[in-house]
Length: 395
Ligand SMILES: Cc1cc2nc3c(=O)[nH]c(=O)nc-3n(C[C@H](O)[C@H](O)[C@H](O)COP(=O)(O)OP(=O)(O)OC[C@H]3O[C@@H](n4cnc5c(N)ncnc54)[C@H](O)[C@@H]3O)c2cc1C
Image 1 (cartoon, protein in one colour):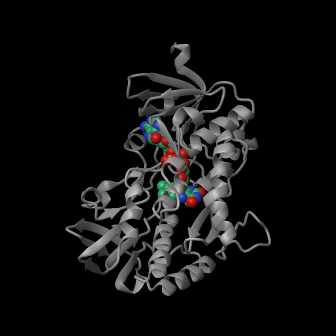
Image 2: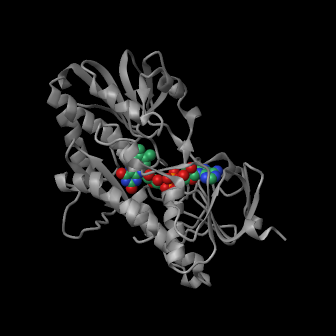
Image 3: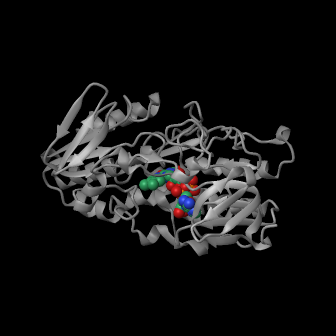
C-alpha cells in the first residue's frame, strides 16, 4: 500500500490557472482530499505579460508566490512531475516521490518548442529579439520597442496550439500606436508574420484587424512562419516562399509550443503533432485511461487555448470528476476568448465557440468593436477577478 500521505482523492499536475482554479472549485463543491503538484515558486497572471511588453504593467503586478494562491484545504506539493503511469493513477516527481490518487488531472500547460525555431534562444540572449510570452524576457521588450526610431521590426503570431496566441497582436498594435504618437512610425518598417491567410481565421473580427493593420501600415506575411534567426536576419518561410529580412532592429518572435515531453512519454498524448492530452473535448475525460482528466493549454479540447476558456472547463470538470456515471457528465462547448488591443487604450474582445461561431458573454453588445471600456476591463478589472474569484473557484 502506498504511504497515505502520498495518496490523494484528486491529484492535479500543475498549479497554473487551470490547476488552482480547479482545486478551489472542487473544494467548494465538496471534494475532500485535493492535492496540486507545482514545480515553480511563483504564480503569474500571464495575460498581463503583453501589457508589460507595452510599458503598461510591471512584472511585480502579475506575480504572487505560488503558496499564496493555493486554496485553503488543498495539499500543495512543491515538486516537478517527471513521469506518469496513468493506468495505475500514479506519478513520479523530481525528488523521487511516488504519488497515487483516485482521480488524476493533467494540466501542466504547454512548453516552448525551441527546436522549431533555430536561433531563437540565441537571438533572445543577444537582445535583438524577445517575446512577451517568455516570462524572463517580457520585461526587456518594452525598453527595446519604446526607443526604436528607425529600421525594421518583425512581429509574429504563433501557430496553434499556443497560450492565447492571438494576443501576440497586442504588443504589435500598442507599439505601433506609440510610434505613431511619437512621430517615428514612418521611419520604421513593421512586418507581421502570421501562420494563416488572415489574423484569426474568423470573418468579422478579421475585417477589423485587417483595417487596423492597414491603418498602421503593417506589411503582413501570410501562411508563414519564422524558420530561423541569426545575425539580425529573420528568415520567413511560406508555403512556396522563403524571405530573408535583414538588418532587423528588433524581432518580437513568439516560440512555437508543444506538450511537455513526459506527457507524450507517459502515453497520455493522442495523435496531435504537439502531443496534447488525448481527452474527449466535451467531457474532458481521457479517452483511454479511467479516472484521468485534462484541461487547460495542454488538453486537446479542439479549441484555441486561453485562460478565458478555463472558466467553463473548470466548472464542467469539477462536476464530471464527482459524477458517478458517464450518463451524467456535463459538456464543454469549446468557448474561448481572444482579447486584442488595437491601440494603447482600446481593445476588441473576440469570444467564440468550438466552431468559431460568436459566443458573446454580454448579449446584445458587439465587444469585437474596439472600445476603451473593454481595454479597462482587460487591463484593470480582470486581474482582480482572477486573483479574487477565478483562482478561488468562484467563477
Ligand atoms: C503572454 C500571454 C498572454 C496571454 N493573454 C491571455 C489573455 O489575454 N486572455 C486569456 O484568456 N488568456 C491569455 N493567456 C493564456 C493563459 O495564460 C493560459 O491559457 C493559461 O495560463 C493556461 O493555464 P494552464 O494552467 O493550462 O497552464 P499554465 O498557466 O501554463 O500553468 C501550468 C502550470 O503547471 C506547472 N507545471 C508544468 N510542468 C509541471 C510539472 N512537470 N510538474 C509540476 N508542475 C508543472 C507550471 O509551472 C505552471 O504553473 C496568455 C498567455 C500568455 C503566455
